[in-house]
Length: 353
Image 1 (spheres, rainbow, N blue to C red):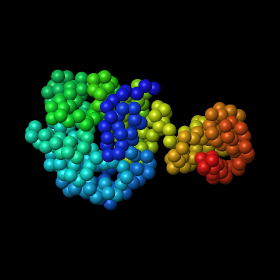
Image 2 (cartoon, one colour):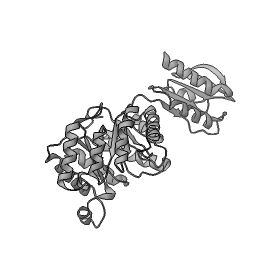
Image 3 (cartoon, rainbow, N blue to C red):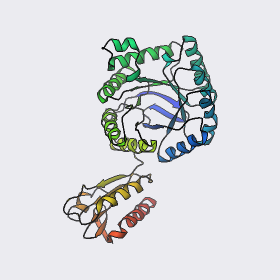
Image 4 (cartoon, rainbow, N blue to C red):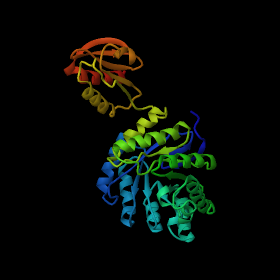
């Protein structure tokens, strides 16, 4: 697909925008001042594939903790800040790689200027976070209190104007809402009007089940249009699951290569093995693999190797046994008890070669 050619900005050592890859983000749900917990969660997220991590800064102690946290992790860190400009200044002094604020809600123009000047000095970019649930009152009043895409774009214009009047151009924007249609329309309008990078997200998407479906529909639709430079899937669950979902979305949009693809049949009356636990075990195993490999777990030999011919390797069930195949060619029979262990080892062997 043709991706929007936005302006490139740097967040630490990670390039966002231009024709660079879509960068995966998540957010810690720890208290930032709990340095050990925040570092441990960040390292786990990094191992899962997170490329930028965001932390909440509710007070100066949180902002000061960033310095030590940053010394113990290997990906850029973003401070999420609301209302108090002093917290932003402290986070920048602590070495944060980006701040997420709404310039209009941190006080007077003088306070905004202090934050922007400090960002200029330290080369720290700003994400302007527009949210459908917290738009300015006058913009909501134009539509009887309900957010619209036009109102979200107008809010973005106002915040951008504040920064550009201070000759600050190292920014990106997000236009999040919990409503899919509002999100899609807002980002589509933004992609036509602004040339800054766009951070994609559907806020308050829901639990792992409902949030995955909602995020896949909305974010996948935008990504397929070439819109979006960095992304977070927001789930009411372990942040590790956010990374799992976003990698799958990017992979299916042909935007992420270093992750396996699992093909698994839905089972039917022909299935002679206990397929579902086999598929789940292989799926869990593949989450530890960073390779563009396609693996199939099929329920029967009637159409297993044939339908999964595009797979690099797979198992097709027989009567309490399985047929191991590669590129559609049957290699050997494997007992049901050995299916999972054999397939795992063969996958590792294939990757090593």
